[in-house]
Length: 402
Image 1 (cartoon, rainbow, N blue to C red):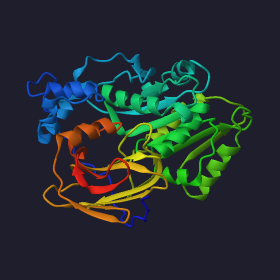
Image 2: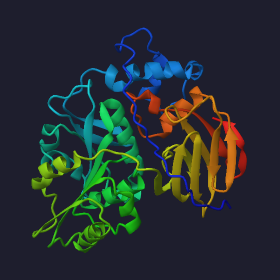
Image 3: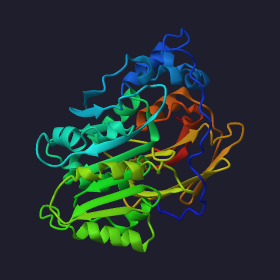
């Protein structure tokens, strides 16, 4: 059993850096074809040639190799197959891959086929006309918090690779059971979304989860006479946010259960003022079992965990409340946070390691696969090295390079 200690360090995890220019046109000879193939299918094993490519070259070639740079101009509306399901998309009329765009990621309600009504009727053209990419994943039955994680992550990953999405301006929206899912995933994936819009969704969101969303755009819509999803829990969440001084908007209608598309314009205006950021450190409760991913700069495999992270001056501080097993724990090094000429100190609970980091194509490509998305226009923000400090089976081990 690994005991937890409280992390005392509180430092900024995400440091913004100027955009790096693309390496050239999509047809530039220098573009690594193996990298292009990997980006189009990141779940496939990278080729030996790709693993042998220096990280500096991968970073240089990455912007020009992204799928949204290399494909033909997409249709403004369409459907994409992912994760044994699909998502619908609607692009702004002036969409171009030469700039990044904010995205509304909208979860439908429970009736079969409800994704079409939410995407085409309730949203109509409002998001596209306001300059947002609208992506609406489909889930049979619409019970997002029970079975939707894989569809959500893979739809997000595909959309951000296919279109030029600003990863700091992705907002999750949900109606009815999709609203409950939006509450659930905005707190569970607090590192991914810049805001949450909940429309007549029923879920008891805890005070702690609301605190995790303090810096996010929160727009809550409900109805006093809603018999499908009673208004009590929405009022309670709004009262808690008011008491904790968490910025939010709460709009209550006198009628019943509905998407209330008349609020679309106000919603889009409100969320536009928010972008994703970490204020000092990352603290959240999350699971690494079902869909492996990197949170902040670690990848853990195991059960649900309470997690705090910070990084400052080549010192990573990780507190992981492991009431149940951790099977493995990897720490990744971000290019803009790591001085590769000096040791990195990793303090994991009550154990302290000193490691000598090195850039690794294997770590870089694995990190790309595990993280739902990266901003390829800022290569310095990508993970370029890493070590494993807990082996499969939960044993503390001497750090091993990834």
